[in-house]
Length: 282
Image (cartoon, rainbow, N blue to C red; front, side, top):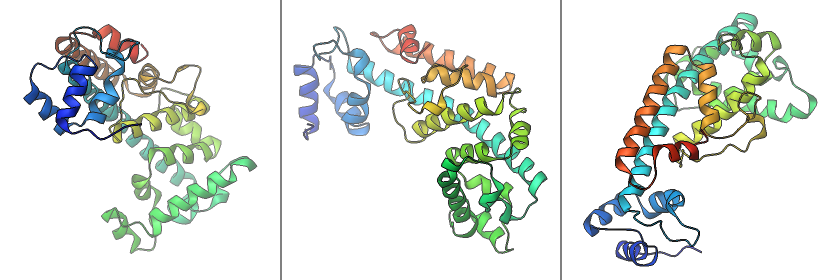
């Protein structure tokens, strides 16, 4: 059970009980006041700990901060390219859907438009409920409110307010020919594999958006597993990015990832860049 400790008690616990080197208490106060004990220590201590619960010899508070800040950079990097895929997916789904069904909102708000097994009917109804809210009630997007005045919110407008998780669900329920048309724009990925990749992207996107620890995140949704990505870690995410991004973008991603790891090595004395990559699944 966790108990409240003031900043001075937190510092004493880390240095006197856990063996963390804190050479500058003023620095420790600033760090713990701005980041927080839970967000920094609880979330990033594991790679630095011995089996007895104390920190490995030579571990400094600065090393935890280095991992914390590196993880921020990793989240920002991966979210950037996940959003790039998401934006492209929105455009393609809306285009091919409207090409087949037209621009009237009644098409995407009709459960009979979608193809699904009987045991997935509840999921389809929930998807349509969310789409109906976006089209008829949501007050979060000014451009949707404006379009609503015309009596119709086309999918290419409504889809911008749909989460990646819901978009992935929608894609999985689309007629097969639309799924093929969309997936072929992502290096010819087959639709079933593409669905699993989208599930993995959606899980990591949520992790990035909520600021949760990223480097050691694992996806436990069985639908996110593919033959190409037989794991559930950051390395699996990287494999999906390699498959779905255009080549110039993936090259830039790879270069940025190497730079982040190199910077970490220059800031952390206890963990190597190679060890961090291993913790990410590489």
